[in-house]
Length: 224
Image (tube, rainbow, N blue to C red; front, side, top):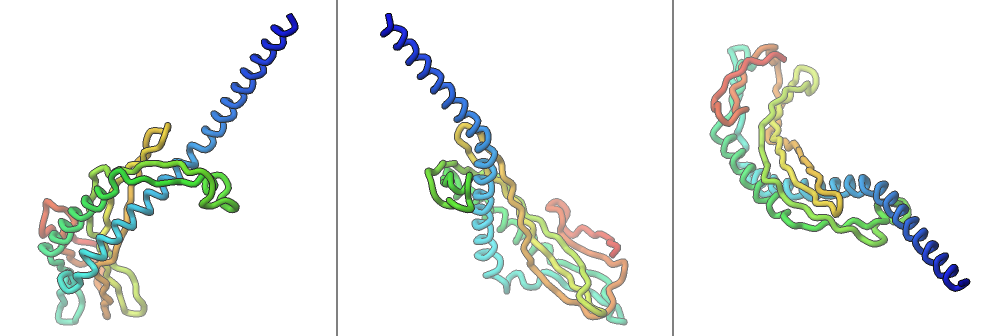
């Protein structure tokens, strides 16, 4: 009789321990899940940004001679800027090259694994890079675009700086164990031209650009 009671007590104790362990694991998982997801998203963003930087370096910055004359300015008799013209054919070519290469770069991330040390998640100040690792996958979403941005800024007394930036955007998906997935959008801007204009730039000027793929040679009037 005493043996049966003792066995029943042990089973109850074991069940209580299992329930406690399960509850502790659930609480820990609930706390750790958003941290792991955020850490994985940051790592995916870093990896994808590095891939985009390589594309810019190889396809644009190493071909400066080809893309070095995107912008020209028209002036009146008083040397004031009256119009800004961009080489829309070259800019469209640059956009096409960038988008194609972005697709390729993002697709190379397909099925890449990111390993996250739990020490970096729970106590990065003391255990960064240590402890067991959680593996998460990363895939490309097949989305990429490139757009040009033009801006005038003051560069000092009687000087104005004109910049054209290439803004590139891509998306990747992080596959999280037991958590589904998290989509990450990467947007970066890169300078393509940098021109300092000496003299007065009018408050109103004509800017002929290629801001939309469907409207080459679109003309806009801007107000500074």
